Length: 445
Ligand SMILES: Cc1cc2nc3c(=O)[nH]c(=O)nc-3n(C[C@H](O)[C@H](O)[C@H](O)COP(=O)(O)OP(=O)(O)OC[C@H]3O[C@@H](n4cnc5c(N)ncnc54)[C@H](O)[C@@H]3O)c2cc1C
Image (cartoon, rainbow, N blue to C red; front, side, top):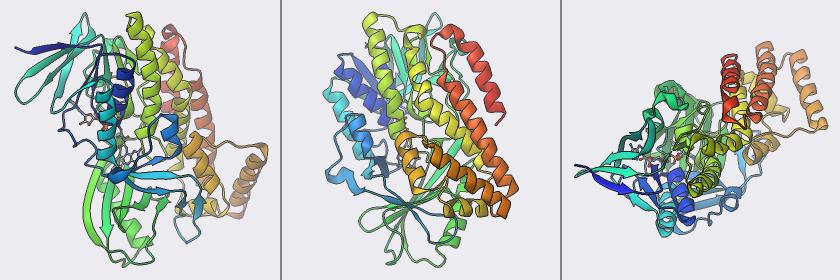
């Protein structure tokens, strides 16, 4: 026999996205259940230190971190070319924080707003009535649970356990994420560092590597590479050999994790169902960070879910505004960036060195714009300068023919994909042709 509970909505996963949703929907007076398979205090502990752009705290109404949660505040960072010491200064502030404590804080906001978090409770399947979700099934060490609710939100992270359990007929892609579609992130926590080892925030985009602040005087030497964990380990080793030969340090610990590196499902909603955060592949394509980009969708999901619940109608049509508002804005930019990155991976080391040296694509300005707006705004002057530098690079042979062609292709395809997402259909009836064309555009990449 299962114990039966009832709420207005049930959220799978109390990580960053789920806890934020629980907080905001609880504040709106809904009876919220969150199921979390880990113990209280565990979510986020496999990552430890992470960072969040300063501007996002005000955007999402989250108080700034303090106490043990706060590792440091960094008003700027440096972006490094593949070779040489001419770093670009990126004037864009970040908070470096302790993830388990940040999640604990969000969870305390959620419970303060009346949400109930059931820890050590694993989602095991959707409760279906007439082929549509009517709640979830879950289990603890000692019992089976049924939580009935007119809305289920999947915030279960990369594996999207709710999404993959949906009946395929509901119109959301249900295939599990392919292991090749992850960014495998390895973090090495180093201590006892030499004087001249880089401090603060440092990005090495060619290797997809970074050196960030660790605990005390230490640093985190990290990498994020697609396809395979072994590839990430190899590139990290190579990066360290090239950049820091013979460096002395003490390895405190080494961890790794996965973030999605692929386009989101074409629809984030079905009857009585929504999916957000890593479960919907909403990480920033250029960095793999996903906490605040997930909040963007959560914020829209809160307004959409609230309106639907108040109306007593959680049909796909009522939940559709999450698709429209997400994909026409952040979703369109991320789709464009993803298309760009897939092609730009073909740039050679020399190409990237050249682009760094000419302050284009990899300039401090570009990095700042990318983080702030998820798109680099180009006035006519900058556009002209970029075009001239690209052409000049090709004519002088400093930019390879393949690199030049890849950049041209990246610009075209990313514009086409972004524009297509900006036209995401207002009406679900117009979705099938939109989806067919989107598939076609991705195939061309
Ligand atoms: C090494 C590493 C470093 C990162 N650094 C940063 C960074 O600096 N900044 C940044 O913004 N992002 C960073 N990210 C990405 C970021 O961690 C994720 O994008 C973000 O945590 C996604 O939040 P989420 O709530 O969608 O998923 P998660 O945080 O993964 O939460 C999902 C929750 O669902 C629970 N769950 C899963 N399955 C079930 C089930 N069957 N039943 C019940 N519960 C379940 C999980 O236990 C988990 O607590 C990093 C990722 C990695 C791997």
